[in-house]
Length: 326
Image (cartoon, rainbow, N blue to C red; front, top):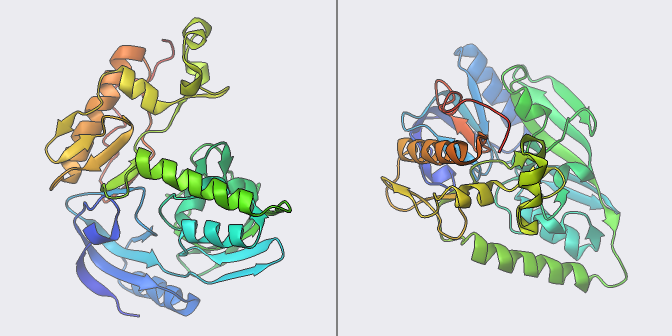
């Protein structure tokens, strides 16, 4: 394992934006992870962890301290039990599970990023989330101490987990995940067809050629809106608990808006792309503009889902006040 200095993080993210890491390393084994922790401790460096970089916006100034990229990607499938390293591609695991005639992950087909990132943000799609399948998560704190989290202890809920909610209190690395899936039907081709259909849909809705961090804002809680307002919404824009952020952004008129090299897609207003040589500041300004427009239109402040790295403070914390209504 080599610890490098002043490494640009742009190429490690799907958005293609970000300054350099003061120190950087990729770890594939537990021994390498402990070496990285030791280096950070000896040099009194803060530690930042990243996986596939698919839901991340990195500051233009970069990230101070040691950035650890988790590349631990071993995978063992035994019956309906899967033990997988946090650095494995989520979509690769979905493909493997479908081929083994296991059911539970196919709704997540085509989502970029790693297993660790999926656990961190409780990746979800089409009514299912990865947290539903988790039996245990192995986590190492920055002292190299191993901790095991049961499904309940992971605190999974919409777009989040205990690892995301308490990242400041419990710095460390999601290292390994144990999943239990359901055994599929006697017609495994049904799941393969579903997987292919979802990937085809995602390729149209979220073109893979675009540089993006995925959906920028999380959906709004339905309880923030009046019953009268909810009754007038089209069915595709809502569920029992949520109102689609994309719908609110579209209705606020921000689709297609561009600031610098950052742009909001015309057909999916919650999808922000690097349309040229965008900077992190371009994305922040564009997202703040979109957040403000939704607030002005609906009286609701959307919360960003994209993880911010290298920022001194959350630039969205005081963009507009939080209220209920609409």
